[in-house]
Image 1 (cartoon, rainbow, N blue to C red):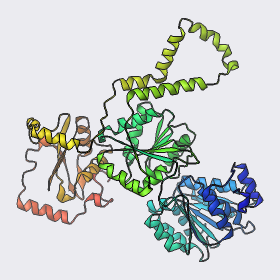
Image 2 (cartoon, rainbow, N blue to C red; image 1 turned 180 degrees about the horizontal axis):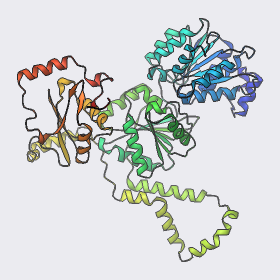
Image 3 (cartoon, rainbow, N blue to C red; image 1 turned 30 degrees about the horizontal axis):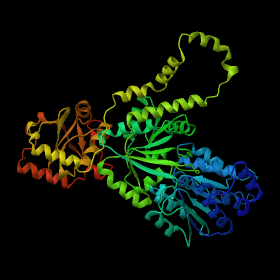
Image 4 (cartoon, one colour; image 1 turned 90 degrees about the vertical axis):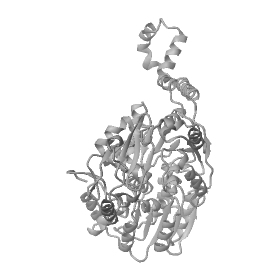
Length: 587
């Protein structure tokens, strides 16, 4: 089928022809005729990058009556970046439709400028929920003549907590309107939104519900938690032409991984919520133009980043929400190109891999980390291929060649090649010559080895309460009765120190805890945790050897007072407002 057969007008056909649209993609072929010939509601399910914007955007601009100077269509999306992208696409589609005005409105920029533009008259508003409500309440955005509303990336908006804002927007619309909902996944929340705001909606599914992109391969590497960064380096080094997003779970982890990659000579940039909007724009533009090879990002910060030619998505930390994995992996394998989604996981995350497999209907391939020899060979052959394909501009270099030949006259061909090889990938040879061994953990093997050591009495040399070699043992006056478990402990330490703390052995008691951290992080953690107060209760961190009475039973009256205090308080990890803070400082 061609675009001419879909029933598009000549101005729209001329515009999309200039954009290089040859034939409609599956979602466009399924949706465009329906939207041109029907006013019914519609749900479109398709992965990011499958042409959804054109599927609803082309009919949207064709339906606009430019003789009426009022807002007739509304597109709501989760992020500033996606808002600008959609506005740019709709402007391109309407290039040859005279006097059709499209306006993106979003937070983080001058609202007065947007108000002035709205007063001049806008036919299509592309908006983020918060800014749209703000403009509506100021009576700048007039929605009483809107006939079509599009919720683009609806699942992302719900994940970001925009459910109430969406309800407020629908309250402002006239009763007679068409609702178009587009999403990558059909979660229970999306089904709830569809039941609430759509009536007798037709559902168009490209692929199948909640499945990952068809052209994406899913792989995982199993490593110990302490080997994750070393494993990441090996994966990146094994693919010399990699162009990837590396997803991390937290802002702290994102910055730390990016800093390590930059320090190790990689072309990497961080992208997370602590960056200013200007910094985020610069970072994303550099990545879009391939000036950055590796973008290390959190899920929230990467939303709205649209890049068609990603070779890989690397999950440095698996998300808690399986649907979020679908969004991550769907960023590669787009526009007809193949892509790979890689997960670097440890033993405790193996169950998540199985859950994701069931959800997306695809199997993960269990991969072994490439060895140093294979990595160096890959890098060398890539350098040689690049050398062979380099075009020589004879005219440009001719004035300099006599001096170059004279300078290198004393070197023979073999010596020049050796020096070229050293320059091109010497850092790989140097690193992997002494690279640490990365052993893949085997299910049950660690427990078996531990049992064998215990049976042979090998643990008897380590006195009770003494830290492992290279570690420092700490005492903390919080325990299971306070709701403290390993996950909460790690969260507390990482938030207070603003770094990822490598925690060794953890011993949790009812009223207190012991844990071990590497010696090089001990002093930093002590300073970070000094004078910490949680729910008005001082919680001091002490080295275990400094607390001779740690673990001894407290007197009954003291236990009763502590129990009453705990009963009246909510642990900070159950309420985000209760953050640990330092005395005499802002929380």
